[in-house]
Structures are given as C-alpha cells and as structure tokens.
Length: 194
Image 1 (tube, rainbow, N blue to C red):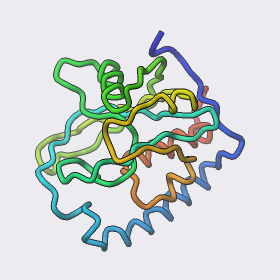
Image 2: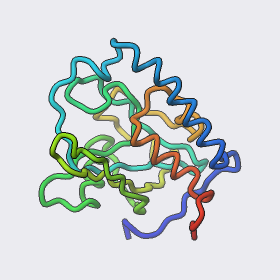
Image 3: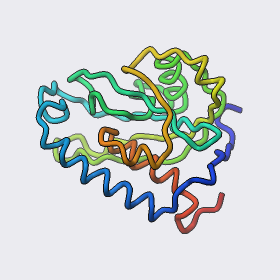
Image 4: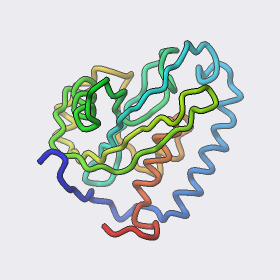
C-alpha cells in the first residue's frame, strides 16, 4: 500500500530537541545577514505570488539524511534560490496523496512507493485576505539506489543533508526547515507514541 505505515530509520547521530532548537536559532541569526542583502532575491524583484494548498515530501534516506531541492532562481516562486523539500501545489479536485505522487514524478521522474503523513502546517495569510493556507508533509523513505535513478526536472540541483546541517544552512525555505526540525526531533516531543 502506497500510504501505509513506515518508520524512518534515524541515525544515532541525531541531535536532541534542545540541540536542534539551538541550531535553528543560530540559523535565523545568520538569516538576518541574508535579509540585509538586497541582492539575494528574497525581498526584491518578486512577481505576484499566489499561495495555495500544497504538499511536500520529507524524502528520508536510511541514515536519516533528507534529500532537498535547490530551488530555481525565479522571481515567480516562493523562496527562489533556497533549498527546500520537493513538492508543490495541489490541483483543483486532486487529493493530497495524488498531488504528492504527481509532484514527485514531475520533479524527479520518481514513483513514490510508500509515504506516511507527518503533519500539516497552516500558514496564515489573513493579512492579505487569503485565510489559512495548508502545506501537507509526508515522510517518503528512499535509498541511494532511488536517488541514483532520479532525474531532476525542476530546480537547480538536489543533495542530501543531515537535519543539523539543514538547520545551519542560511537559505532553506523556513516552513521546510521548521518541519524538518520537527521530524528530526519527533521522538523528543511529549506525547510521541511511535
């Protein structure tokens, strides 16, 4: 079953929730320098952006690393030139699961074999009259053989990183960084049953 249960293998080198949080905070201090740089494309030369319901894949390797996309450097997308999870907008009438399968195939020519719902992040766009826009995250287990067969069709590149490395990187889409932090530290949260 494609959307059956799967427990990702997390390496022994995973950090505690406190270490992850401290690394995340350092990342945002570094990001202050990026925001001050008007040539990075984050705050300048943007075209109109249209937030919509989306799905993203936490593509997890057996060692616990995450495969990320280096996003295109286009002014018509969110966070151009940043690193982020693979995925995208859900088409009208499409289920979240079908959108996940379609997006990953369109971006990587990879057929998702298994995925497990992880969380939904609701991003509040009420300030511009759009309400709450959900972004659904699914854990998608992959291995090195899968990566070697993938064919990148969207983005500038792809690479795998540990959660700690991702949280230390200055240009990661913030919603993806947050959910990667949650996923990497999930066993540290009270109430975790798996």
